[in-house]
Image 1: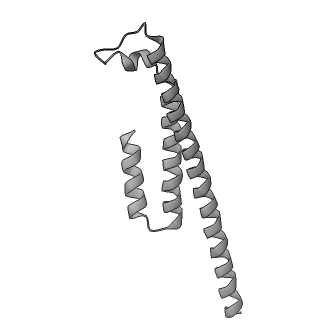
Image 2 (image 1 turned 90 degrees about the vertical axis):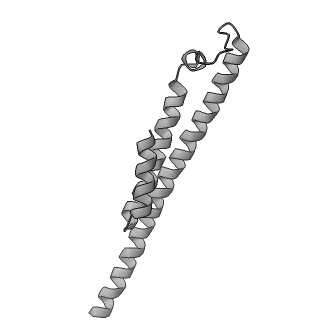
Image 3 (image 1 turned 120 degrees about the vertical axis):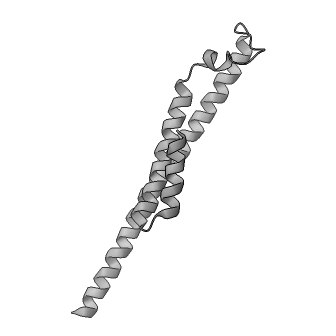
Amino acid sequence: MSFDFIGFLLTALLSTSHAAKHGARAGLGVTLVRYGLYIQTQDVDDEMAQYKYYNPDDNETREEVIEQNNWTAYLFIIIGFFLIAKANAEFVRVRRVRAVILAGTELENA
């Protein structure tokens, strides 16, 4: 998972075109959606077993952890989908502006 964030940072900082910049944002959105789905499907007992004072019979703590994981997962998924949608919308907008500019220069040259 860490390679995804490093790849996003490198691509976002070193991009020289709008396609690369918006592609990096969409890729970050996909990474957040994937990470949210990973959190949602993770087993709570395996996660909590590494703590010293974890009691597997304590259902209240287990339910709290499950609820927190679900909220975090849904938050990542929603933010990820918004990033994907925004990146695609911005890319389409840039393409339309480019088409208008190119059409204007063609009229001047004719």
